[in-house]
Image 1: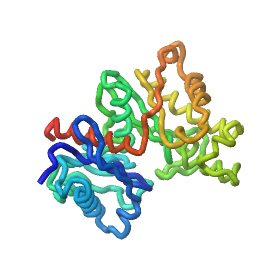
Image 2: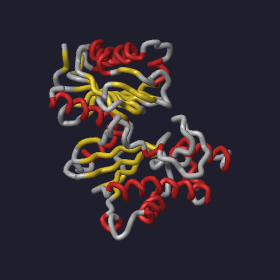
Image 3: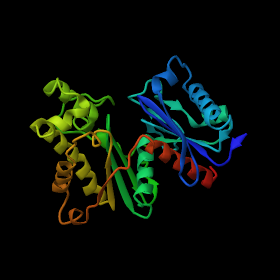
Image 4: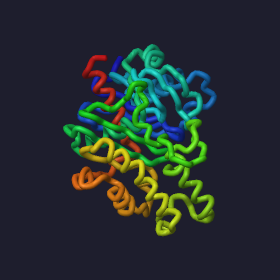
Amino acid sequence: MKADGCVLGMDIGGTHVRAGTVKQDMSLHGFEITPSISLFRGAGNRIQALAGYVRKYCARHLDGMLPKAVAVGFPSTVDRERMRLLSTPNLKGFDNMDVVEPLQRELGIPVCIDRDVNLLLLNDIRVHGLENAEIVIGCYVGTGLGNAICIRGEMLRGKNGVAGELGHIPIWGSKRPCGCGNIGCMETAVSGRHLEELRTRFFPSEKMETLFQNQGNDPVLREYVEGIAVPVAAEINIFDPDCVVLGGGVLQMAGFPMELLLEAVKRHTRRPLPYEALKIVPSSQSQESGVLGAGMCAWDRIKKGR
């Protein structure tokens, strides 16, 4: 049996799996968070582990009935056809893995997947009423530097499906190794991972959650914030977007100097335009955002009948 009034959205991260049912009116029900390690520990077959989780979720929240469809966001690069995961640096066992077809066979319902950051931007576009904007870019500073680009209502995929890897543009002269295997990626300088390195080196007695609150005026952290502005402004100058969405766990930390970041982004933006018409909004990002974006993806799949 199927629960015809809802789809299941899932947001899989390196630390937690978030899930919930989403109705057509975008109301969220049965939201839950599960440690990723408990879901995949000892699971030789990741697809069977995912299918098992979906069935258990449905037993808890839908009286055992399956939803109309399932959509999953992964912290991965995904092939252009959105069928297969290519690279997942922060989650072991998900590289070069077919997902859609085997998971559909296991569950017997439609399945769609995408980059988690694309689903975050989908939800932000909905929340901020940006559906009719020509170009919207989203920059999310979390563990890495996430980026999504929406053009005329469609997420930019690129020839191979991996467009929008802003965190992996190179920094001239940098020798820092990146988790992707390259040297000198932007993510090595403007990410939550690098912020933790700075905390360990310069503020060892400070807790990560109070770092900006207590040390935000230190030149080391101000330079870090200024660095975030560089890739954001570069993308603004390339795309001339209608709107820029800024978010991610780092920007949501207590005491984060958002005004300093905004000033730096504007300083690096080309004048007179797009500087004079620049619109920047904060992400609506919450624990539920990726799940809601996944729900939108699933309903779109159903609407298009594919």
